[in-house]
Length: 365
Image 1 (cartoon, rainbow, N blue to C red):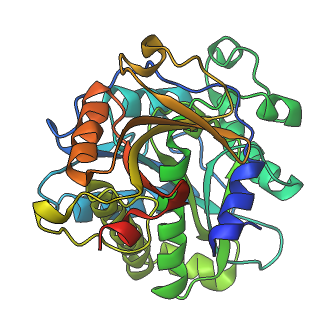
Image 2 (cartoon, one colour):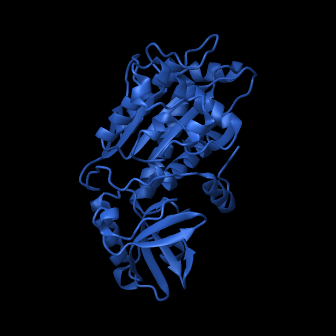
Image 3 (cartoon, rainbow, N blue to C red):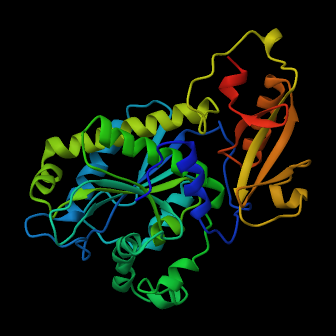
């Protein structure tokens, strides 16, 4: 089990992720010109019932939670909600990803229920990545097995076999750009489940889910609990339990959006805005992180949606790509706007003090 409890665990977790390709050329809208869009994906549906359980239906519970979550999100003025399904119909995994990509979504959230042959309980949230152990692989294998219900699945998924660990390991991680944001949201969700709902915390994990692989934005898959557990199954099937689960996810998404708006996706404390004349800091270099990944890219503008002057740094086995450099906080915010306008919608500001990485909030306070 991998839980993001501190910086050391966070760094260790990131080093486990194996990625093979960074996506820089996806079609994206200009940041700030449209509402923040969240795609909600109710797992399974129609001829695919989901996890087997004696008294409960995963597909129905997932749909109910998604609809409740959608209604809560619609209360936010500048936020749009898109459903991959809003009724009991079968939607294949690739179509779910297409819906999210066509909506040019800012977030993709897939809702599921877990099952096991014992009375194990607890919630867990996944981001796309190499499965860290056999248990994670078994969860991904079950969720991916739905492709066998799809027509022409061998052609559609180019021979991908969800029962093969090698095939899952070999999946191209098109989400590499969005790893930090996905982890941040996943951690918020698990914290809310644990602290607010007092649910068992099985942690933030990684696994090769096809439905996450198909999306080009920060994405998470939530296992809301075990419907095979007597108490948890009753909780998840109840209107009250579903509303509480939806509420915890809603608060996590709201917090994620606020943090993204304030350039704090990787920060821990809010930034207090200071008067303009005090926002130049001696010995500090602000930069805009636009991407990260295993692949070492030439620092040519065509690799970065036309942005020039991009820098590259190797940290913990990952290449970090930065745009802009200034000791003037307002100037770097303008560079961030340019990066987002170019298509890097999740670009965020980072800070170095005398060459050492620090938090923006530590400088701008």
